[in-house]
Image 1 (cartoon, rainbow, N blue to C red):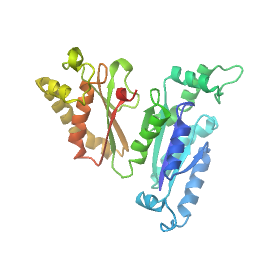
Image 2 (image 1 turned 45 degrees about the horizontal axis):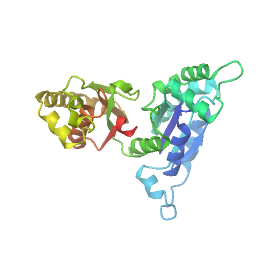
Image 3 (image 1 turned 90 degrees about the vertical axis):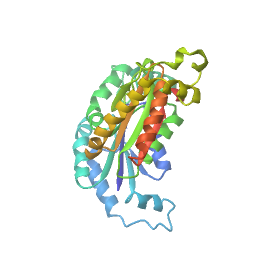
Image 4 (image 1 turned 60 degrees about the vertical axis):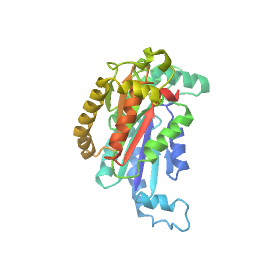
Length: 300
């Protein structure tokens, strides 16, 4: 069976992620106590196989080796329950359950703004605890789940539609036993992605931004590609990054990682990093089954 745990701070988009998984055939339960998880998994495993001829979801369930289950665990659970969640999850993994922990988060000012816009009450706030204090307490409470997460998604700059697309691409798209690799471009002036496992800095390369006719274009445009290729240091950087990844990505995969995010940054995230991500993805698509691309600054 396939089990996905969705966790993260309130306002980060957990409900939207669960709804997307439900839409694609997962059985979803929100706010389930971690202590009940082993019994739930046992019961699901004991259920008879689905008759594919009578169930529209049967083929996708069969392709994943059994039923698909998604659970939300967050600050609404008791403190003791959240603390024991990592132990329960590791026990399930040891028993052969494919279990991915997905942790969603956003910058605290963004979460404060989201709560003010929706006028929702934070589950840990009360007359003596203001919102920011509640968010900080929540971060501390969920630290054990955050530390063991297979995939961290920063939703600060994502719309609900973009979040659903990202979850569908990264989580649902990773249906094989292999490691899903995301090559992500970004701009340092907008902050380093919190979901990055490896970060490469291209700010030392010639910048197309300072060429007037290239300023409004991106690393996907032929003119920018040609500009970068005329500078030998671009090829040198690509070769060095490729050699590093070819050396170490197999080790990441052997450590049973389900996801690896390789973030490539330049100043604004629109020229050099976009170009490099496209080149790296082409190179590694022939070596790994699930290679994905995201250009963060182009989605804003």
